[in-house]
Image (tube, rainbow, N blue to C red):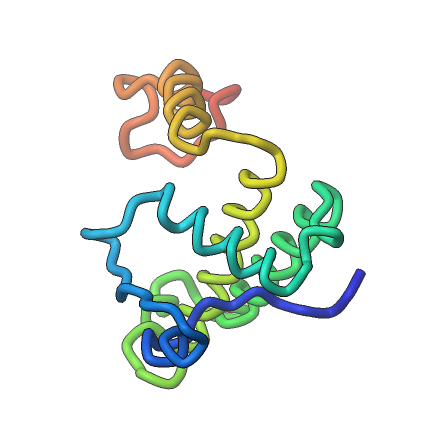
Length: 145
């Protein structure tokens, strides 16, 4: 598998230099569909779809999740928000989280998975496994409630 990471942290002016007008994205203004389109366009422009099998994307996603976890390794839970408070460390954490989400979006693209439907279905399953009256305030697995 090629050692490349899809990162979309380019500023809008960098996209304009490539001959495109690209709007700045925020959670409040950007749909999942728009994110998926941007990720897919990024991969297609580089002819990377040939490498984006479900196996490769799932492994890349896991690797990036590991890189995200590294920022909190050996940190006590109570202190784990501290790295998010410092600009240089926060930016690295944001980059790793973005990589995880980018690979998840590309996996959905390649697999033809409707993320909104999949999330809605999974939340319904989780609600059945973890009813509020049994799970509220508890971290136990559903088999132990």
